[in-house]
Amino acid sequence: FADDTNIFVTGHTIEEAFTNANNVLENISRYMESNLLHINTKKCFYMIFSPRSKQKAVIDPDKLQLSIKGKIINAVNDTKFLGVTIDNELSWKPHILKLNKKLKS
Image (cartoon, rainbow, N blue to C red; front, top):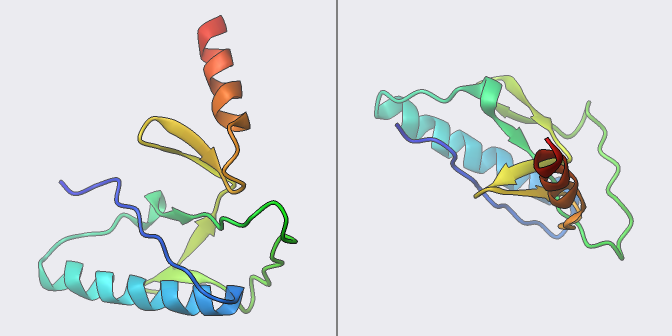
């Protein structure tokens, strides 16, 4: 099984980043299909990282979407990565909160 794959994409603008990401997803989808592998789109999501000093990007879901084979990929604000909970501001806050909750139980 190949799971927990992460892809990092950049762009000078949010629109360019979405275009680049959709191109990467299309290439990955073709590779997986040609090798008889499956992507579980229910477990796929994306997160946009941005510096605290910059204003958060406003994303119009009608114009900017990520998809695999026509299935929309949803955005999240935080996720677990190699055992560490990270958020879209790369702060320690969600990790500390989850760890604190776990230690109290």
